[in-house]
Image 1 (cartoon, protein in one colour):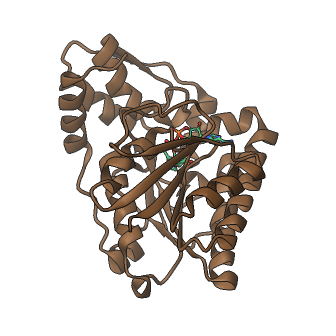
Image 2: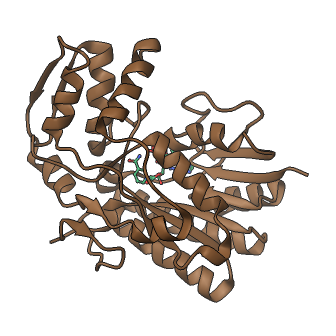
Length: 314
Ligand SMILES: NC(=O)c1ccc[n+]([C@@H]2O[C@H](COP(=O)([O-])OP(=O)(O)OC[C@H]3O[C@@H](n4cnc5c(N)ncnc54)[C@H](O)[C@@H]3O)[C@@H](O)[C@H]2O)c1
């Protein structure tokens, strides 16, 4: 019988793209989101259900009905919106996650995957941030990510839940939400392809840790399929690339020669992004489950160029 994977935040950027990776094996995929429908294409056979993480009843009834063996918990308020509406960020990112973890235990969920973020770090950081470096995030989103890392560890140690978490760099994806401050690298490609111009709101020297979405989806599948006995920790960092915004601009211009690119720095946005790590130490991921990235800046830019040229957005 096919295993059921329940993906919260199932209408969003990463969830929709992940369905194609998961669909290659015998799985029933259920996408749960408060949105009306998936924002993008999803693989054939996925089921979509409306549900709000802030409603314990919605969570309980989804687990009662679908009895998933794996929960992939993507639903979240992202960094910008978490600052705009702190009470809602707490209800979704903290209360919603707590309720989902509790219901996962009650329903014998085997594996619970959670995407943490570079935003779970902050303050004064070394250039390469070790896995166990003290976490003092500057933003509420990062505080909630860090707290869920700890919650997941607790549910594993005390209650045996197979919690697996990746601390992700900023993800570059053609479907990155336009409103996210951290989406500048994605938007530079998407808006240049569609409008011929892009204005960076970060500094030319801004260079947080970035990763291409194809590498993220591969990493999630790799971590989910890693044998339990290989895992020495519950939260793993992955690293891919750290180009400056200036280098990203050059990669765009070298592919779209007439691109109109400039910088109009918003210091609030730039400062927040510069408070995140430039590099994460991913030694444990390489050692325990064989992680290594396949896309550097040039490979990513080539891939985005061919995708956006064959199927432009907006
Ligand atoms: N994209 C990145 O750069 C990045 C980096 C690190 C971690 N992450 C994490 O990965 C996950 C997915 O990110 P994404 O880029 O796909 O974001 P996204 O905004 O595209 O998707 C998030 C989804 O969550 C849903 N959602 C929000 N509140 C909800 C609620 N109360 N109930 C039900 N659904 C709700 C939204 O409708 C949306 O579809 C998030 O947890 C994010 O924090 C993303």
